[in-house]
Each structure stands twice: as C-alpha cells, then as structure tokens.
Length: 123
Image (cartoon, rainbow, N blue to C red; front, side):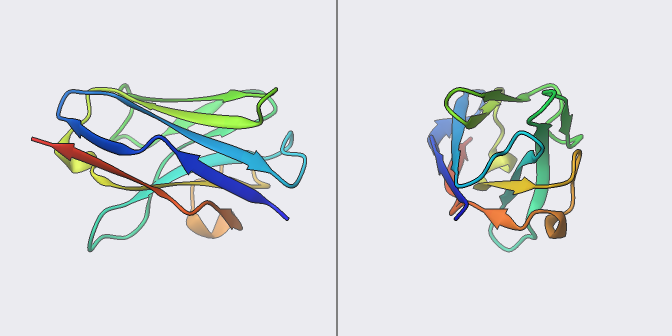
C-alpha cells in the first residue's frame, strides 16, 4: 500500500522559508513523478510543482517559480519542497502525491496522496 507522509509545515513570517518533506513507501517510485499541490481555504487544489524521480527534472507553477525548489533523496525515498521568500498568499495545506506520468500537472493524474501539512504565512 502506497503511503505518502508530509511534514515540515508551520507558521512563518512573510519573506521567510520552510522546507516540506514527503516520505514515500509502498512501491518502487523510480518511474514515477512526485508532485506538490496546495489548497487554500475556499479555493481549489492547485499544482505547485513536481519532480520526475528517475531523472530529477522539475516543473513549477508560475506562481512559485524562482522561489520554490523541489528535490529528492533516493536513499531516503523522500521528496522535498524548499519554499523561500514566502508570501501570505502561499498560505495553504500542502499535499504531496505520486503519478505514473512524468511531468504530470493535473490532479486526476495523481492517484496517491498524502494527508497534507498546513503552511501559514503571516504578513
């Protein structure tokens, strides 16, 4: 059974940084993409970025490009989301998810999801 467990969320001031982690287990992820999504109150869940586990290629939403960085640790089977220059509009629950499709950006392409971790950015 696939398990994705996020951690690292919290409260941070605008301009600060946080690093989220997503520990994965339950399958071989080498051919998968790992995505990060977020959902703010009253809004739809949106794509933040992803990484192809096999080659490390990343994709980012325009709203976070240049501020967020996704990386992976093969030994720990963990994906990270480094968030810098945080803004109040980055406040959301952040989810990691896995997809069998490289470069996947749509929710329906991700069958497996973590429980989410809250990120709150104060102004």
